[in-house]
Image 1 (cartoon, rainbow, N blue to C red):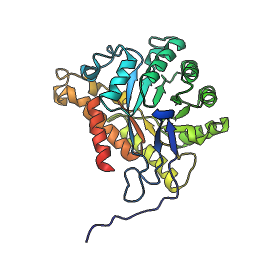
Image 2: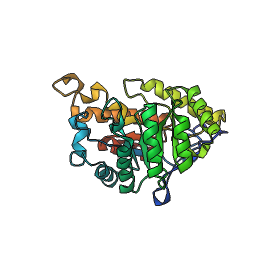
Image 3: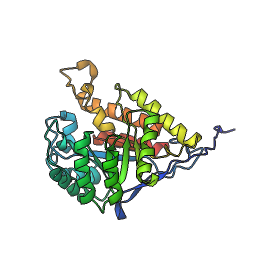
Length: 314
């Protein structure tokens, strides 16, 4: 007699959201059960793997292991994005607008948005634009991005309580997707979605960023919060939390010291060329199990591991 798993019918459902427009459009979400529970419910759309591209050369900030796969394109974000899609299989490109940081290069919004537009035009996959969590600068940059990419239906992040009116209005005006970002708290995530809907943003245009902690840096807390969001959405029919979730994994994992220390600096941590990849893969898989619909990764070796895992779990 074959094993028959216990099945549960869920009264709630994760909304299906479209990223991108036209031929590059891609659907995320749409689940009526927990992640990978194909024995209970249909997996309408498998989780998607995104890769990040910086709008500046990150050579000063990245370890050799992270730079190696992109050494020929780090100076050119558009070429970098094409390489991620054509060679490494990225399904979504995330442009990290690091050059706009007021505590760093502080480039003007017009320059930053021009780079984003070039990247968006260079690839035939959806684009997410990720700011630096400075309300004033993100508002300035994202307003220009929204206008210059008006035909792309990009997703704009992070949209936080301190800037949701300004950035949310720009997304409304140009029909982009809002990534509502709150600091690892179920109630704050719900509250921000309520505020966005009160502003006029449709629930079909909202993706949740619950904020991501990497392995050893709050992963277990992130997992718990994401799991509770899923439980509220599926079992309690909380329609303010029935949005797909995106997790900015690579950016969090690769800024940790453990991912960047050389073998000489930390011989007890093992091979430095694979350490960050393993940390990134473990974080991504954990968050996929918690309910993430999109994971943003940096290293192509991680992309391969995670995509293989998703395929085996369907």
